Image (spheres, rainbow, N blue to C red):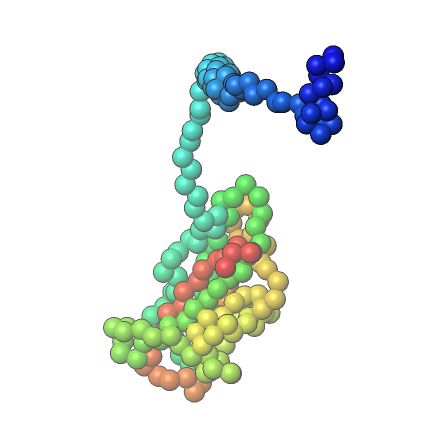
Length: 193
């Protein structure tokens, strides 16, 4: 002990301890190997479990419109209309869904001035320009120049099965003579654009 004290006194009374550096092992290699073994075992167990559970059942489905109209080329039933008369356009809308659907009827009117060779949108203007269309007592809503929506507000209920749609078309006495008209109807379920 005296020897140690003598050493302390010779170096100014400060005791210094020497650090002994021992080589450290890298824990990463063993940890990495262990982690790899755990991952491989988990993958094998998962694959075995998935094979044990079941196979996959698949099916293909084609969705069609729930509303079908009875006649895509519906008309007045006569080839010539006269100014001042009221005609009925009628069609049957069949709801093929398994529940009732609310919808609107979109009606487009096209006009031909050359006997049906070329067609262009009819312009309802602000007063109908000689054609007034109603669905029951509803006068509809003019969406743009040749497009009307029925009803003007709300929807038409389509129960499961058939619903008859009848539109009254009145031609004024001053409508342009020798002109052909087409009436195109599309049923749009509520909420569809």
